[in-house]
Length: 317
Image (cartoon, rainbow, N blue to C red; front, side):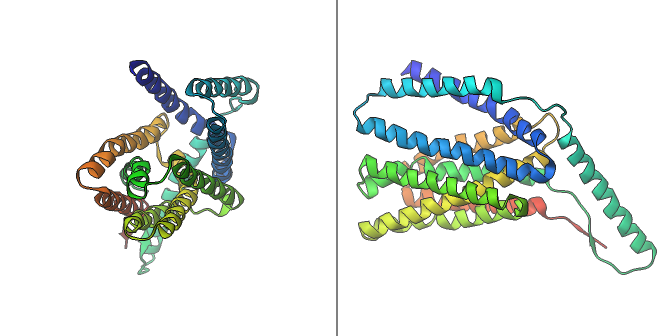
């Protein structure tokens, strides 16, 4: 058990170290106008790999392979990933796209200020909005969304097993539906990446998830067939909205997080996730699953409020 614990910690550390340079690499490979396309393309391919991995794991278990063999398959696939990365992944020749975006936003702010002052100087009675995004609200929204997601999803298999008495294979199938829906969400986002309103997307995803997180409360009081249909709908819609949320958050983080601090995104998401991993099961065990869903929905809604404040600017007369 100690060896497995150390191995898991090492895997998480490498995953955390992987995320920030991956985000910078995508941002610097694509122009600012194509950032959302780049992140959506990456998300679609990685989610497809996740779905295929789940299917492969399910098939290998069905064929009677033991856990040692599954780990060896995972090691082999990781080795292939490393070997492919050597010839296929290259640093951009020039790294300046994020600097240009920061300069453009500063110039845009100054331009709006000059236009406001000129109109006031001409005696015009105008109302103008001048301001910058609230980075602290954005960071708070990231933590709250990640926290709510962990509170909801970590104890969910136990909820299905205890409340509905579902078999492991059925629970596996429900989460496979969630992952497949997420892949479809990435695919649709990829097709409409240039028209994606990132700020509106993260607010919409948080608000809809706050509503969806409450629906499983009804699972324990309706017939099994209806409970399964409701569970499929909730997991499918949640996965679909997460895809557009992920693309929007990654593109926005490249804009608002300062140079040299890109790891802040991964740290904030990790903080929310780790707290949720601890709090979610504790709430479910001590208070019941209904309160767990309510608290998750509340955190999603607070995330919506934070993201709404992130894009709100103060009016100037």
